[in-house]
Length: 253
Image 1 (spheres, rainbow, N blue to C red):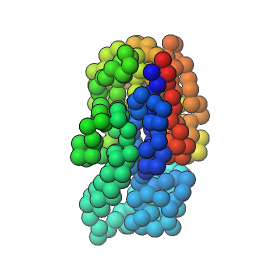
Image 2: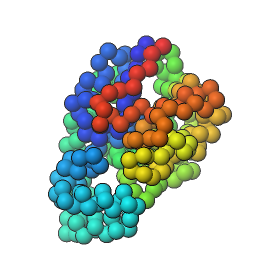
Image 3: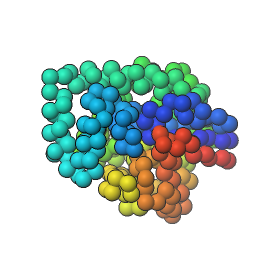
Image 4: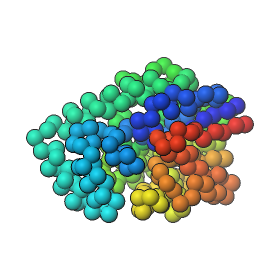
């Protein structure tokens, strides 16, 4: 059995269309939407609406952790526009392209920048969407936890720690624990390019220690200090920033 795993697709539809080549199944750990590419500020919904100079500025402010100034810039740019309608229209265009690229079968969960309410409109019969749910693939039980935790970035699908922990608890014991965000381990949550700690989950870390899955797979942190960390019997793996690499992480058994 061979399964390919991707996360943080962020608009890379061409790569996604090839991500399942040679695999029996594809797993996607979310963040299909590209709002703003921190490596190329000309790509994404934000520069399409407001131009590259404003994208440069907002990245500069966020990287410097000047979040209130970044929010004020955003408020000025959005003034007079229907923000919700503009973003939904752009996200719908991206989702149409992303979901069309998924091979069959695909098992997917949401990232923190995704909009879960739109997914049922685009997920074709070969794509199974899971969040706080389990599925058997090739004789192994995979559990999926989507979304992120509340942060200063205020992305679309952020949950309270309690809501997130309830989804983790609902999974019980699994062979492979799949989530968008990592467990709360310093080496796994620190982004070396953004120079900040992202939100990781203590509930995921507790579940790993308690239930000892074979693997814990996740994304979210694009340039982590460590891509793999072993916690007891569990190999914790950041499957990579697919938008940049175009390469899935492979699991065989």
